Image (tube, rainbow, N blue to C red; front, side, top):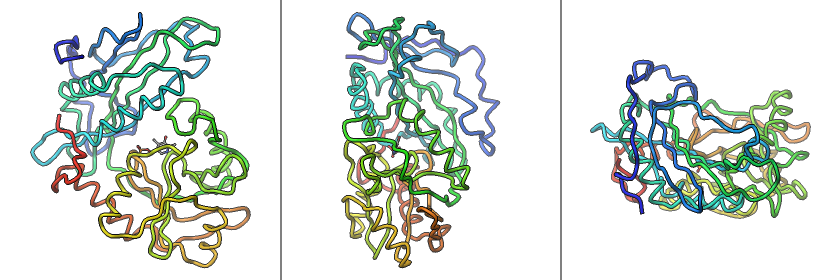
Length: 354
Ligand SMILES: *Cc1c(COP(=O)(O)O)cnc(C)c1O
């Protein structure tokens, strides 16, 4: 068990908070004053601490540098109108970190270590949670192997860290996506369901090829036959066709998004027809040709909702109607924001007050 006294806190001498301009926040470039760390050695997590944000030193033989033995999470905290800091569904991230970790032979991070580290870090850096409209604090928990060993084996030493950075109002410019039928992100028995570092490094090259053809992002399809839609970039993807919200079931190859889960709960409660089932590429292409796709969007923590304006498949490009003002996307975004910023009753118990 961990309590707040078990975390050694070394506060920064001079805060850098004056560098933060809430109305002009560069994404991922400005990190908050402090970071949380804990080390795993002799079979246990130890030395939980909060220190000023700073570089860390690693052996050149560090196992993670060579073999990507690392998993991460992404979540956000918000300020409510009273100025309280609220995290959105952090327990779900703690749980998923361990689901990812197990696949990479990373030992479980106890939920109370995760939650207490997060809570103490957000307390000491509360000033870094911006309050300008649509801003938030992005939170990046991650675990990596620290073994100084160049052989390939399950490591025995690890580090768990949490860093945070304020993020500005995300402008959800509708994106153009290409249905990818050559490269794969995931395959049965692989690591697609895990937020494991290597998955993301390996996705850059295919995404770059699509960008050279003028697309913003890929729609990944199954790694066996490229017959089924899986995800869009690093977001889950949803379609509104014939007034029904359709998305692929999370499986070994699809990451179980917390935003996806939240959107499905909300839309079902609205009485909307929702289907979680395999989504064939052929079905989406046929619906697009017939002009029956009413809306399509990616869902994930970073952008919440990323409306899709164009879908490329082979030599065809389908333009979706009115992507800037999709009614469903806007309703979902408003509802999620109202919950996350504490503007309406939290009927799902999704918010965690620091
Ligand atoms: C993180 C991630 C998502 C979205 O998950 P959220 O919990 O909603 O942020 C979807 N797909 C992939 C591949 C991801 O890495």
